[in-house]
Image 1 (spheres, rainbow, N blue to C red):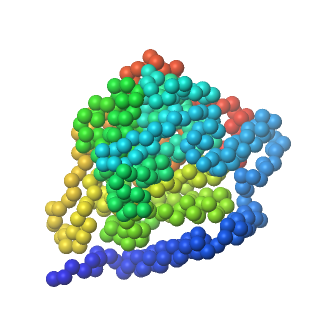
Image 2: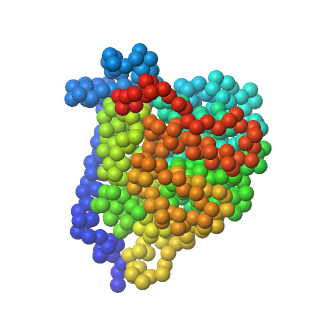
Image 3: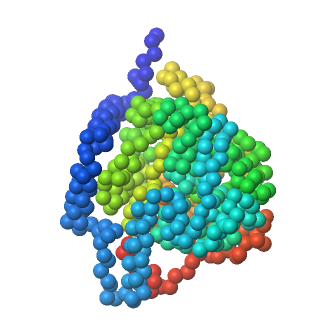
Length: 486
């Protein structure tokens, strides 16, 4: 009998969603071509200005708009509000990791690591405290080493695009005496090179979580340890950055000997699915439909274009609405000014295949390697025993500390703990969602102290640290209404 893809696997509602999805993608692609190829810059700037005027007319507040002084607040509070608004504006317009660090008074180093399969990955390093610069970059500082890794569709900028220095984990870590390194996945803004294929080639984007685990994570860690001469480092991951570590540690037993503790922020292992039921059902029924929607190269590559032509507060509203629809994340713990500033640095290039991999994991309800038999589900039966290889996460020997939000729709802590070794610790963060753990207004009180505590407990060179703090305390009159007003 001839194989007919999709028939019998999708409901009528999902077929309707598929048709409308394809129409929307085609329409968006047409608009993008018109904007990029036919419209001169002067017209694009005119539409940008009109969107800004419309936003203010409807009652919005942009970064450029001055905040009226609150007669009930102290002069210091009013000054802090204006300073934070100015800082958010500068973060919004910062072009790269170096400029973001400079806004906070830090001078980073840039490094490049060549993976075994030929990708060139950008690494960032912050080894000197505020206002200082390492006179001999690229060598050991003798300090304990911490490695931070970002999530899906992100790059290293997400760690440093905060409006307060005390809420940015890398800056707090370097002030506490750590040598801080930040990694980047292949394909993103800082890792868009390969010695074998160019980024316009389909082969360049032929990678999934498997490749991050086999190459990107272990090769980056090997490079860092060679430079720093440290026997071990601490790993802090966010979202997919935790999944990559779970995978890498499970398939590289020797890697466990190089990491003294793995701290997983908003951990991702085998999420149940999306809040958008139509998208969730459609993609679980046939994950490879993502290739039909977005092709086999970079996913959502038009995001940077829309970001450049939309007025920032409007772009922030679009992102907020998308996160509510897809994941039921309302991000109430993130201030409006932080959203406007940070959303400009949220997206980075990633392969469609890596997103397909996530939908395969959701569909199977297990943390599995990529299923290369993309057409095989059409002929599988309900009793079929076929399943791709599972990442053996219970074999991880490295100490694991999970920090998860109790309102994060992607985390089912009971299911996650059942797939991890018994020595795993889990810490619940009340009212936190997913991105809150990165950019929430109180991360300096709720998240960073817990990270520092875990590092202190497992760091073998804790005597070299300057002292672990329990967050940055701010006086009541400084914080009263400040975050809400911004």
